[in-house]
Length: 237
Image (cartoon, rainbow, N blue to C red):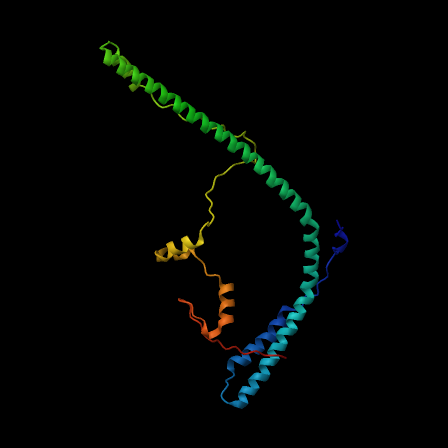
């Protein structure tokens, strides 16, 4: 593994420009264009020259900005690269240990559920045995049927076995949330299509839709999609 410590500068010097100077030049350009009107070809050409001048000022400010931010970005990237590998290893260890702890909890819950079902089955079997005994006594005309029926009536299903709580450890807690995954997108779309109130559950893939519109242009024919032409004006220094 390469040692990236050497790529981190001990300090980064920043020559901060005057905020007042920056604002003054931008404000004067804004004041000019706000009062300017394009009324004929001559004023259009004047506007074009001013537009190119403004574009040049924007580019110049961006160059100054990058002159300040690039050293900072490089230093930040070096720091991130230095800490990323050990953090990734620790996050992997964290995930493994969490899964093992949750696995133990799930196993304990499974055992408790099995015990509960076993107790329910045992209770039901005993009830059925006593009911059969009561019926046999009744068929033979023997006494004791009422007592057996009373015993059956007083039987209750065994309460659920208590799920062992994980040991109380300071700083460690377990929470349960409900999550989801879409296993049949077509079925979901068809369901929402019949229920407009659920439309917010679906989102348009604007990236792929834009690519489709660019490929087919004004000939695009997609229900619910309006395709239109939009003009923009570009300026270069």
